Amino acid sequence: MGGAVNAQPARSLMTIGDVLGLLRPDFPDITISKIRFLEAEGLVEPERSPSGYRKFCDADVQRLRFVLAAQRDHYLPLRVIREHLEARDRGEDVPPLGAPEPRRPRTLVAADTTAEDPAVRLTRRQLLDGAGIDEALLARLEEYGLVRRAGTHYEGDALSIARAAAALGEYGFEVRHLRAVKAAADRQAGLIEQMVAPQLRRRSRGAHEQAAETAREIAALSVKLHAALVSAGLRESLDR
Image: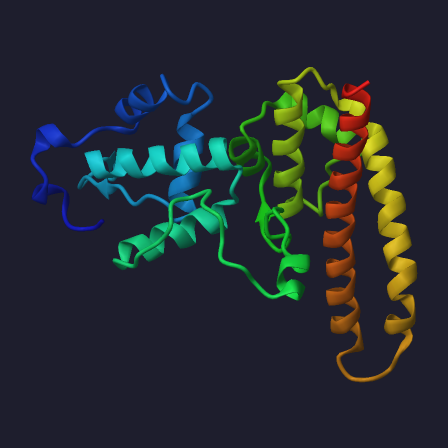
């Protein structure tokens, strides 16, 4: 990507409204704000006219299709999608999104999660557009304590929570149904805090970082255990 607008034939360049019209049949929830958000995240870089208007080429539209499909079909965080695109732009041989990953050390597998980077700070509009939800759903998520603001912003975890809640809503789940999940998660977090408390009390150098890493590994293993138990319970009930 890059280069002056004049380097492209005028007929091949599109406004953001044109792009919205091309994408909407396949991605009904796409909005102009979402396209601007993806641009701000560095996932697409449209040209600019001398007067400052965005001008998209066919390659930009294909790139947006790739990003939106990766979010919808694979539930991948933008960080992973960006890394994939950057590797592809460098000409590296990258596997298709969703392909099985190479085997990794057990400690890395245990620490792996699908959550967005919690260090990311999102505005309300970025959260709405990134998760593809409306104001009403976000208000209910806040009402039931599933999503909380950190000052005037939201942390990256809020994006994962909002996306999951929206996906569950497609199966008939309402936010009030998720209160039990939130309560169970709070209890699990409390138990993990108790397990790493001895490490936190140490005064040795790096004790806090070690405790945080241990907590992340326990949390990841707990998620795997929970998934296995739910799967086993469903199999037993459905086989009756």
